[in-house]
Length: 209
Length: 209
DNA sequence: CTGTTTACGATACATGGGTAGCGTAAAGGA
DNA sequence: TCCTTTACGCTACCCATGTATCGTAAACAG
Image (cartoon, rainbow over all chains, first blue to last red; front, side, top):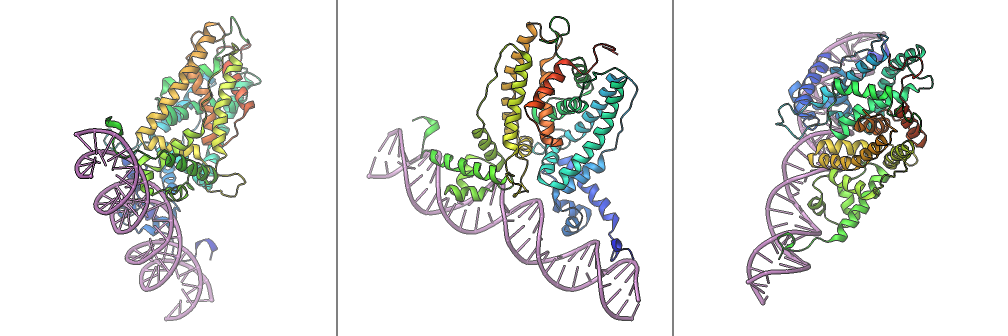
């Protein structure tokens, strides 16, 4: 038989039950409220069975969030201003979905930043970090292609580095969510794109001081 | 006597010894290697004495880092491009100082992101988060003033929102450090400022598509 | 049917953050 | 000189992550 599937097979229903229980706890009580023991109890499973699938709590949390996020792709309407605003807003929406976790009515205060904990998880474990960077690179490649098409149409500067522009857009969103706590919404996404495209420098009086 | 200083006074030498021991561990072995018990042992102090000063390990780590960072202020030479590059590079330098912590020769791999853990600490504890946002607001106010002076000199667009520009600059740095892992240096800071000031849109063929 | 391989459950355990309680030390006030 | 107040050290303890071990169950190969 195939080397990969010898012995007693894994019970896939356990994965489902565990992920569902973990998602409930994570979204309702935040990262600190995600207890391995309670997840195991709610899923009706031994704690050791959990650790057979996910080596740490961080890995489980990443799996839960990856399971929740639905892949949304990039649209290319030809209007780079609109496309970048859509792209930026999609990132903001995904961040907000996680940001609201753990504090629906402000009653369970001790459990805010799922986003921050996921970022920290990526820093704590090499494999999680690599996976995160890999996903980032995959999504980013599409956005880079979008930008390059607009650049070839003459809508963007010829010497523009697409990665720098994307760093500015996505970076500002993460910065607000993680550092300043300011809200990120459609309006901010559009403002961000407008500032990035049009530039902060004054064109009339002193275009390049 | 004053209500605030009744009873046996705190031994300030304990604070120094603890902060020094904690800084050594944090910088050498990262956040995971910062063990309260070991800090107490190295400082020759009981564990409970540590908790009398810092309620959690997160609070101690924040105190250590705050103790390490030297306040660097903002320079205003009149050349906004240069001033913003300097400002951006200063943030990058501070981030890099922490980023290199825990992996000098790649021997102690398990302890990378001090920055990520500090951000997570701000999300875990309301008081740390508030302090961080307060410090951010204080430094940001100076940068906003710098931008507004340049705007009044006609170097920047009249309708520019200074906060958005700063989000883009600082955000791109944090994004690279926390998410993509790409390096941040003087060259990147200048590239960032150039892109932000000049704008991504092409001025000649299709200035506002 | 028997042996091998892997999954599951259960228990015990190591580790580290954090708390509680108690005896003692150091300061000022009366 | 007491008395009160706070700091310190010490011990014991709670809780959660994560590991080790062992008996048993489910699959397949021969």
